[in-house]
Image (cartoon, rainbow over all chains, first blue to last red; front, side, top):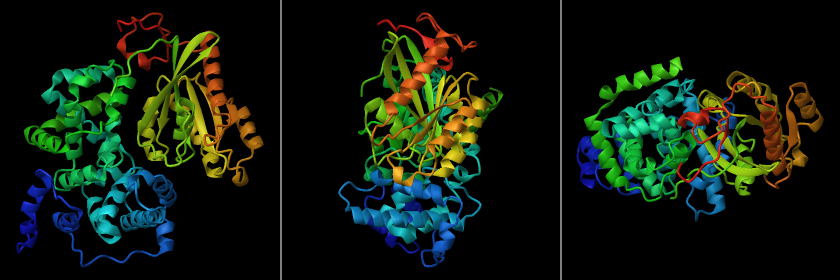
Length: 286
Length: 211
């Protein structure tokens, strides 16, 4: 990683490979350097933060405050309360800064889970730069006025699962579990559901370097990883929903990153898209 | 992790918790189902549910209570979960008037997506914040009266009335079921229901060990 960072010009393609390969970018110091490079961010030209009045008058300010106040569990357990409170203030400011700078986009509950992850690793200014870029790319579809596009992304889940294990897909369809169990996985890049920040940032390495649909491929891969247990559930929506929405603490993320990457290569979005559209049509008819 | 398999009950009632973000829906649920209150509870993204069984007139009622995200943009997703619900708790925060003003819109959501005979409770939560009260009980009671809702005030934090609120909801549902108010619903008598039976409104069944 150091070699890729030291090369001139910096070898971004190599960094991308390293973000995906075992261990990812390894440490938060390296992430501070590598994440902006992966996203082609000019860290020397950061626009000034708008004044407080502008930040607080945004239509979503109230919702952001509500969510940030309820984000206590996202901070490391040993952190002093005053330090955490100051982080939470920064978090509100940072989210508002991103929103004010992208007035065409809409805040959603869960966006705060993404921003807090970056804030804890790279600080307020770099978080703004990174998110300012990501909201126009990976997170763009989540921030429409409606959640239609987000819903459509979720429709990729069952077809991907079906390619590997058609029986499992049938089981899930029969249970009518839907895809909402993994909604927060997708729109927070698993930040809302995983306990350990180390696991979350490792996944962020992977997702930054990959296609915006990669979180769905990982979701499919997690369901496939648990296929035997899933199919032991009573085939009814509540049982399956509960089982799937609670992620076990010991998921082997390095292994899952490799296998979901393989899934993506084997069944890329272009192959899956048609089936996802068919699911959407069925839902509309219903 | 163990699988939650079928357990015995006479009726399974699906209840939904709806209302603006931050009014305390998740804590009402955890107070009722686990007797827990969490000051550091997270925002709910999507839908979650928990269950608890109570006995009414010798019948075991299993309440399956669905908690939903409060932000408006999630409604298109969460409203799908109103299907099959026989009870709804429409929650507002007594210390935030805007959350009471929005009750109208939530009620409309229910009218659009839920069964016509659904039992609806209007729940003014956070009565522990009495020094910050912004919604008068009389106003809420009058609103409930006008719209045929059962009105109750609760505090998930100090437990006041939480048990009572859910009990009342389940009692009323049970009464309507006994009176066959839910005319268009599937009241299955045996275990031979189709597997999609959770989409039906009410289930009456006793599981055997072979299910």
